[in-house]
Length: 158
Ligand code: 4NP
Image (cartoon, rainbow, N blue to C red):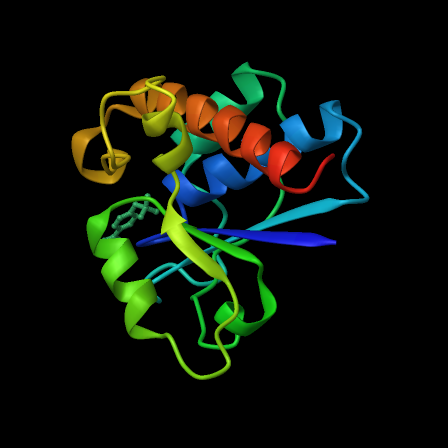
């Protein structure tokens, strides 16, 4: 199983959106037995909560199933996941601070593959908790998820 963890700050807006979008694309591709997706936040502000209602609303609008509750990223995650994808530069810095001798995850930005393929012109997913631009977040999340899944399929011959 290839294990993917998507990380943002609060784990209620961006990363649960991306977790559920990517899991849906994986299921559509018939790859659920090969790829699993989870998400976490670098902060503990919202641990145990459902995703923001705008995030859940957008997923529902696109007929994408939602599951999960917020949790905080741990050092152990970097040992047990294969890929850890951060939503923005601050999230990436915080993930990298948790690196240890046990870390085996490939750590990068969620939009790296979409950016390299010129599908998006930004490196980071802006935080809709502050911008209130949830639709824009969804567009970036969809493009990032598609591009990352393509990369997984290439890298793992799926
Ligand atoms: P997220 O957005 O990192 O995309 O889940 C945020 C959610 C909550 C807070 C910050 C960002 N907060 O400060 O409570």
